[in-house]
Amino acid sequence: MIGDNRDRLLEAGIQLLSEKTFSEISMDQVADRSGVSKPMIYYYFSNKEGYYRALAEHLLKMAREMTRRLYDPERSLRENLVKYVDFRIRFIEENPGITSAFMSIITDPNIGMLINEIQEEFDVMRMEFVDPMFDRAEERGEVVPGVNRQIVMMMLNSLLVSYTVKRTNRLCDQEELDPAEVVDIIFSGISAIREE
Image (cartoon, rainbow, N blue to C red; front, top):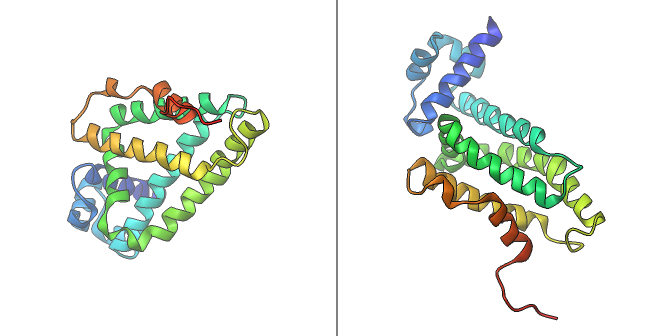
């Protein structure tokens, strides 16, 4: 029962974040949405900041688990990246609430209190998935040795965050972003002139 209450409180936070920013959410709203008494919020999380931290950690762990299921070391880097982009596009469509909650967390102006925790989680994801994926790609000759993988992933994720903002605000259609085309541009670039 104790774990159930905590899970219900986190789920309520995800639902509420799909509707408003964290600073607009009151602990009364969390209690009402979850069906768990307000004192229990403070029992589990101490204060609103503790609740916010737990909610951000919960969303980031969800992201890591989803990435873990996607990554296949037997596939090429190109195939893994296409799967990743395709998954993110489909996830936006199929999980608008979680998508909005995640966007609320990463774009909140009060993120300063969480920046270290978020950076640590991204570092774990980089070590678990990105580095091994690029290491194998270099070993297989798929990419030039020493390619700046952080820039590649930052470009890819920046595009996906921009797309997420557009989709959640209904500013574009899903068909506007083709996963294979996105990855091909990263691999091939846009220049028609090749330097020797």
